Structures are given as structure tokens and as C-alpha cells.
Length: 122
Length: 122
Image (cartoon, rainbow over the protein chains, first blue to last red):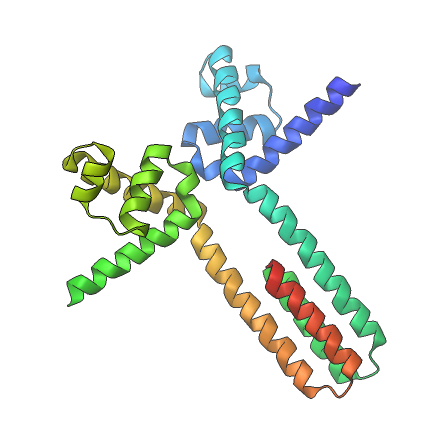
């Protein structure tokens, strides 16, 4: 059970890293990683589809996983994005509270506008 | 005059790219790029300091410039950061206007608090 849990957790982790760093991979690496992690194809299926040995696919995926983890270690884009999302939630929450306290409709609509700018752009 | 302008502009551009992508360079590349772009040492000075030929330093800087430009082309971190800064300014400006329109001190101080959270964390 815990092995399955780790397996899924690792898959999700790699999927997220792909969202941030896939452009740093070569086209071939990107294609195979997407087939494996986003389209859930097996090693054998990818091997057949790309006319590459199963072992070569396995090695490529392993190497790319290391690359992605190393990029996150160096640039911390996922970490920074998670932090930004938390700050955004805190700010929205503060604005919501202010909105509830206000009686003025003009004020409320201005706060709503600020909130929209935050939600749409940050 | 325009050549000097471009030269300075390029130096600033590379300095900014270094802020975002230097961790993707090797230690040696990072050191030499920082000596050249941030500490303003000449090729000859860096050559002497690092016991490397002037030509090798020149080639390394040229190669790193290409790498940095390529990283920005792929990840667009500088572009995204500039966009985020503009959005942040717009939000702060909207909050300032709301603050000016308000008569309630409690309200003003809540807006101030929201502004601080934005300034300190985004």
C-alpha cells in the first residue's frame, strides 16, 4: 500500500515538474515523458510507438526524472509557485473579510475589482 | 554612441538573465560571468585571476550568453517576473485609490495591511 502511495506521489511530483521544466528537455525527451506521465502509457507501449527499445525508454525516463529534480533544486520554480499561491489565498481572504465588513456598494465593487485583478493575473 | 548604448544595454540584459538562471551554469561559468558582468573586470584581468587564457574566457562568456538567452527563450522567467511586477503595481494603485476614498480609519488600516502583504510577498 505504501509502495503504491509513493509510486503515485512520485508520478504526480514528476508531472508537476514537467509543467515547469519540460521546455528544458529535448523534443524526444519531452515526447516520451509526456507519453509516460501524462498519457499513462506503459514502457512497452511507448517502446512500440517510438520504435525504441524498452530499456532505452526506461533509461531516458530515469535520466529525465533526475534532470527535472535537479532543475527544481536549482531554480525552485515549483516551490516559489506554491508560495505565491498561498500568499494569493491569504490576500483574497483578507479582501473577502473587508468586503463583508463594508456597507458601501461602491466600496464592495472596488474590492471585487481588485480581487478579480489578483485572481486573473497572479 | 549607439554602439555604447547597445553595449551597456546588452550588459544589463545579461546581468538580469544571470539573476534568474545562474544556478543552471557550472561553478566555473558562474564565477567568470559574475567577475565580468557584476564586478566589471576585463577579460585580461579575469584571465590572470583564473589562470585561463583570454581567448578561453572570451569563448566561455560568449557560450554562457547564448545559454542564458536560450533559457529565457524556453522558461520566460524574466518576462513573467516583469509581468507580475506590472500587475502588482496596478493592484497597489487600485488599493491606494480606495484608501483615498475611504473615511473609515479601520478600513484604511485593513487596506494598508493588504498592501503590505502584497509588497512583502509578491
